[in-house]
Image (cartoon, rainbow, N blue to C red; front, side, top):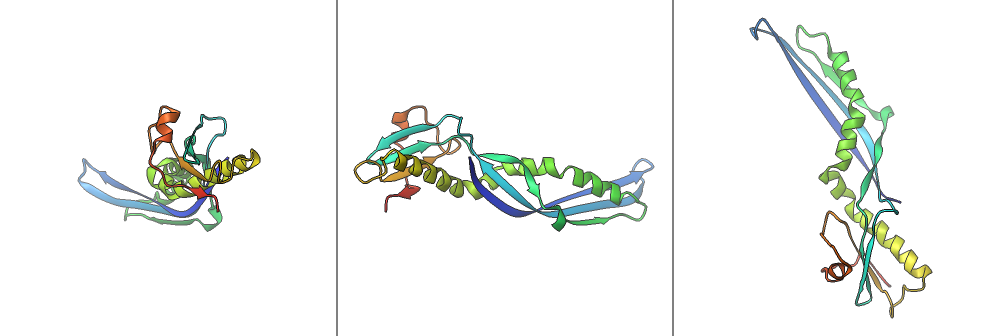
Length: 178
């Protein structure tokens, strides 16, 4: 189930210094940089383990982990490339090609890093809460005498080993009955 989409401009820069003659003669530095807009998508697997508990008309949900949908979408039409070579260097185009070929792998790593996951965490929480709310409505449990709020937490936020532990978590509802 897709939970969130985030777009950002990503930058990658590499430099390569070259010396010859036992590091006596400096040939210069090649510096390459690519800036590109990227769309990151995040999902969870419905088939992964879920944990649910109830407390005071609140449905407590420990959802499966949020995962990046790989590879991220690279908007190549808007890609900006820059390259500079030192006085005796003629490899800036090769270095730029190497950097461009490594973009997908580097963006996949960025999609999984803590900073990128934090950017979409609340949107993911809201998506899961809406999903659970629709399920509770279909089962006729979404009402003030049954469930009136949904709390969603993810495995990287809390360690929960039982429904009892889940029901005892301090909470802030992601969604409430209006």
